[in-house]
Each structure stands twice: as structure tokens, then as C-alpha cells.
Length: 68
Image (cartoon, rainbow, N blue to C red):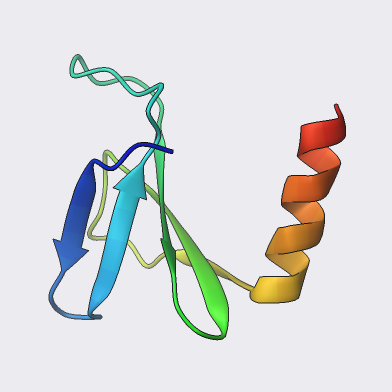
């Protein structure tokens, strides 16, 4: 993840866009963490509700992906 930070005032979440994301569009996600959950959204349509997962589930997912 990069430090390209976007703040969503309506939910007080700090969104981080992938450092692999270019400025020319394309497929990308943004991630925001809170104390109890990780929120994932499509960077092209930030108005849609994010996909939300429990912190422990996100940790297991990231650990699984890192092994691939």
C-alpha cells in the first residue's frame, strides 16, 4: 500500500489506494481500517458501500495471499 490517502468524511475513514494503482484508471481497490473492521471499496466508485470484514478475517486473508 502507498501513502496515497483519501479521507471519507461521512464515515471518518482514511482510505489507502494500492501503490500499484496508476493515474490512468483501471481496476483498483482502496482499503481503510478501523478498530474492529477492514473496509474495502472500488476506487472507481467510492460512492458505493464498502465491503467490510472483521480484522481477524482480514489478517488470515492477507497471510494466505502472502504465501501464494
